[in-house]
Length: 432
Image (cartoon, rainbow, N blue to C red; front, side, top):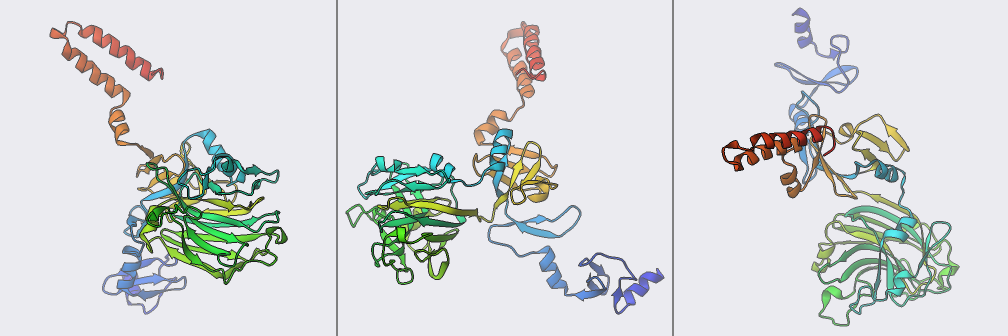
């Protein structure tokens, strides 16, 4: 007790008087809170410590989680995490080893052709005006009469993208990036926001356009008409001479999407250095015409009347606050593969994500709840919950009672028992 009294009366509570971890906080009755800095204990502001550790700041929509068992410390986090959560061994191996390759773009991404004529595609033949080169890049093989391109299978509302666009053809037309793509499944109409590089004219050599080359010819049909969103052609002018083949390595477009907000940059023709003054910023909240692009949407690459348009050096990152893109999670074995190091790590899914969260696979949409029992519980649809609310054995026992009920005086009770017992045996043997 004497040592404890000395501890309370000490001006500086030293490491010799009490052994604690660095940054650990203790409460001394009548004295307040003290934090160990590695050398001595220092008095800390009670309110600041409480707010920092027990009422932590966070982002809109996050919820508070207890940091670890048996403590009052809190951390704010998103309830749902989005990423690669795989429960099939073959698919896991594919996802673990894949990169965003142009072979995938060429073989599986949706292709479009627009020309403002109300037809989607406007020219079906020109959706095939592409070739996968031996070096893995994609090139256009036609001087197209329509605006053509590819858009991703997955959708995003947070991403970073950088891509080099080039052409060995002596033409001077358009190459671009589709910042967001929306297709109305009822009408079949397609809508885009497009970042366009163009050497044909100074008027819009670098611009962001709503529904590029998708003008309907009717000014009142607003949702189907193109409109300039931002124009920095004074910063990124038409090159002189203007044919793209003169400018290796082409031009670079850089994109940052954060929810409804976009930032887009470009380089000069023949340069890979982004010009910071080329920045075009806009928000989907700026105009009601942008509403269809809110929420996760596809992105892609495009060309208009520029033969040999080629996309290379593609760098893409899903930057969603709920995304955990650098990992691939093996749901069956609770193992974690880190794509940054190309190997498995010691941590399991609960250590990376945390208990009490919900995880969603970006490809299949399957969702699991990370239970406090460190088990992964598959979350299914309402129909599935109704279908699988009872286990197979529980269902068979229920059938036993129902079947006995329908027979008068239990005349066939023994027969019912025999049938159900046989079925239960088959379930236990894995045959059903």
